[in-house]
Amino acid sequence: MEADRLTSLPLSGASRLWRLSNLIMAVFFGLAGAVQINDPDPGLWIVVYSVPASLTLVVSLNPSVTDNLVWRSISDLHSTACVMGSAVLGYSLVTTAQNNILHEEEGRELFGLVIVTAWMSLCRNSANKLYLFLSRNSPGGFYLVIALFLCLSPFVMWLYIYMNTEMRASWPSHCKTVI
Image (cartoon, rainbow, N blue to C red; front, side, top):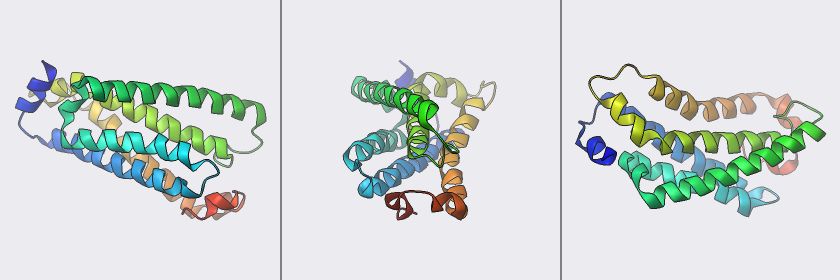
């Protein structure tokens, strides 16, 4: 079984990076959920970010958990809801967006859902791919490079938004107090 092979591998640098990436994303999702407290619909968005925060925290502690039926079911259900939400927000943006999509609340929400969906997909498929990647005969680190890029991109985006005062000036008041 894949999980048995994953747990029998020595804790290599790549494995440590994968676990660290999940820990970073758990922190990001936790922070993203915490700043939703002043949103007009906080309950929805706190759940949107808290579920992947919990799931990725567990993956950072035990990567083989992604083979667990309960973990996979929660991940699949949450990802499906995020994909449906992305479709609704994407349609709304196409029909009503007047500015850069980061200036639109729906655009920022859409990016959040895309990040959640991409990360959960990466985690869900990690048990199958990590064994190959972490084994001594691995052909390369493309999978890990994607993970590192994804885990750093939300923080780079937050930094960009923080430094771009012109962008923040047009935001509704509940968004201005989170940074």
